[in-house]
Structure formats: C-alpha cells, structure tokens
Image 1: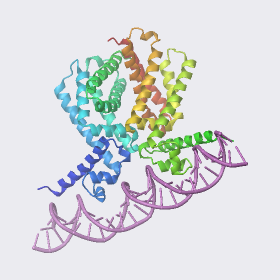
Image 2 (image 1 turned 180 degrees about the horizontal axis):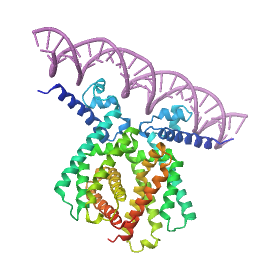
Image 3 (image 1 turned 90 degrees about the horizontal axis):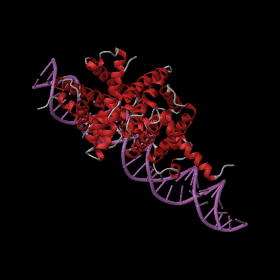
Image 4 (image 1 turned 120 degrees about the horizontal axis):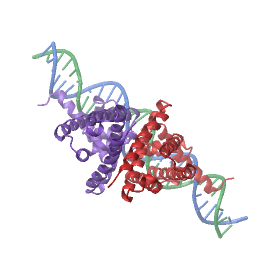
Length: 205
Length: 205
DNA sequence: AATATTAGTGTACAAGTGTTGACTGAATCA
DNA sequence: TGATTCAGTCAACACTTGTACACTAATATT
C-alpha cells in the first residue's frame, strides 16, 4: 500500500513525464496546454494545481531533475573513467548514450534554453555554469593544463560545455532520421573537441 | 498610388513583422496564434490565408529573409574589411552589432533552431551550412590555413559558425539586463574564437 | 466600358484554453 | 474512534483558437 505522500509524488511524476512525452513527440513545451498534460497523465485538469501553479513551474522542476541525473552521471563516470589519453572520446560517448536514453529531457532542454520563459532560460544557464565549474576543477589536474591561469581555464570549460550542449539538438534530430548517425556524430564531435583542446594546450593569455 | 501587388507585399511584411514583434516581446513563436499575428498586423484573421497557409510557412519565409540580410552583410563586410590580423575581432563586432539591430529576427532564429517544427529546424540548419561554406572558402585563402585539408577546413568552419550562433541567445538575453554586456560578450567571444583558431592552426589529420 | 480577379471583411462555429469553487472519500492524525 | 487533511473529481465560466463561407470593392484585364 502506498502512502498518500508517495502517491502524490507519483502523479507529480506522471505530470512531468506527460509533458516530456509531448515534447518528445514534437510539440513545443511553450505551446503545450496544462489540460493536455493532465489528460496524458491520466488526471483531471484541475488536479494539476495540486502540484504546480504553472506550466513554467513544472518546467523548472524538469530542469532540476535532469540536473540531478546529470550530476549523478558525472560522479559515476569520474570514478570509473580515470583520466587517460582518450578522455575526450569516452566522455562524448557517455554523453551521447545518455542523451539518446533521455531523448525527451534533452529535447525539452534544447527547446527551453532558447525558447522557454526568462526564468527557465536562466535556470538552464545556471546548470551550465555548474557543469562548467565541475569540468574546470576536473581538467585543472590534467598535465596539459598546468600553465593556464584560472580565469582562462573557466573560459575553456565554458566553451566545452556550451559547445557540447548546443550540438545536442543535431544529435537528436539526425539520430531519428538515420540510426547510424550517432557514430558519425561522435566522430565529428571528437574531432571538434580535439581541436578546441589543442587550442587550449597552446593558449597563453 | 500603390499597385495591388505592392500592397499585398506590404501587408505580407506586416504579418511577418507582427510575428517577429511578438517573439521579440517574449512570446515563443510556436505558441503564437495566427489571430494575434493578424491583429497586430492590423488585418482580419482570415486575411492571413491570402499570404500564408500556416504559421509555419510564415516562419520559413522569415528564415529566408534573414538569410538574405545576412548574406548581404557578409558581402559588404568582405569588401570593406580586408583580411587583416584582427579579423576575428572585427567580424564578431560586426556580427554583434547586426544581432542587436535585428533582435527580433535572432530571437526567432534561436527559438526555432531548437523549438520550431522539423521543417523550420532543417531550414535553419541549411542556412548554417551555407554560411559555413562561405566561411570555408574565405579562410582557405588565409596564410595560417595552407596546410589543412579541405574536409577539416569544413569542420573548422562549421565549428565557428555553430559556436557563434549558439552564443547569440546569451547576447540577446544579457544585453537586455545590462547594456554594457555587449562589450564583455565581445571580449569573451574573441577569446574563445582565438582559442579555436589557435587549435585550427595546429591541426593535423 | 464591361468583365474578371482577388486582397481584405464579416459572421459563424465547433473545439480547446486557464481557472473558479464546491464536492468526495480515503489516508492521516488526535 | 472520531475529526481533519487534502489529492483528485466534477461542472461551469468566459475566452481564445483555427478555419469555412459568403461578401465587398478596388484593381487588373479584356
């Protein structure tokens, strides 16, 4: 038997999943109606208000959730990975797999990063900052990065995070049309990231 | 006195401008209604159909229009500029100015690149390809780029175009909150682009 | 001058929208 | 056991939505 609290959390999740499902089906988050979400969650429209005041609030919670998932992924990868030569390739492989396994989330993020409300956009920007910082402290330890100063290291991390995320929409779109594209995408990304990495190695303020 | 054809083109433009205006005001293109657009264009809803079958078709035409404007900008800049050492800085300055002078267009593009219909997204992707090609043939002539092979040159161009465009949403958002941000944005971009450029210079397949 | 074309109008309709307020019944607490 | 809390229901509201159809009047064509 489920406790009341637990049940509530369950329908709350249903609502978020419903919204994500619609986004994954091609709808734009900002044009999804509260009613449609409620319907797909198997709940009456007015019930929505027991969980969120707004579609925006729901969206902000989705951002949070994905943030958590990504942080967990990062922690796990860091432990198992070890920073070898092929860091770039393995990282991007982990990332693309993760994206493909959470397509709806990433469609949502890609959309809202540019098309959400201001609050939503800046929530996403904050997540980026977080990841850029994590990345910065990770790569600081690397031998290539001994000479670079702290501010420039932040800049490189930002560049990497932004660039990877911004390419995600292409991955999502093109994987749909041709399933072999994921490999091609990885090759392209590895090349581009190596190039950036190369630049970072030579960088002097 | 205006000819009928000319008058038609005028209201057609009004419709597109109305849509862009709404986008620039914070609405998401995919949640804008045909009726609202018609109203803001000073025309009755049903009149919309004399020009476009759809909001999507309107959107595709907006993409085209901006593509034209950008090509014109590119041609002019190429003539006047001359490819000196400070190519990167002057290019990014021209670009940011252009963005700030066409805010609505770029909000629209940023939104639709990730949140438009599939047709819209791929139309925008095509524009990118075009610009990447232009850029590739421009930088091929540069002394730094003599050793790089053609395919890798394309890769570098893509990287540059994508990266600049994807940063545009931050420029738009943050310029609104603090007007001095444009300068800071330029500095950040110049740094990042120099880094990429540095990598490109050292690049060997 | 008579005719055909067509951009823009006006009306109408069925369907969907967010949000309100009063309600029900089962889980929780006293 | 009896009282309370509250997630979910139901009905109703005022409004907005896309689109069909018949119409008008000014322009373009013959």
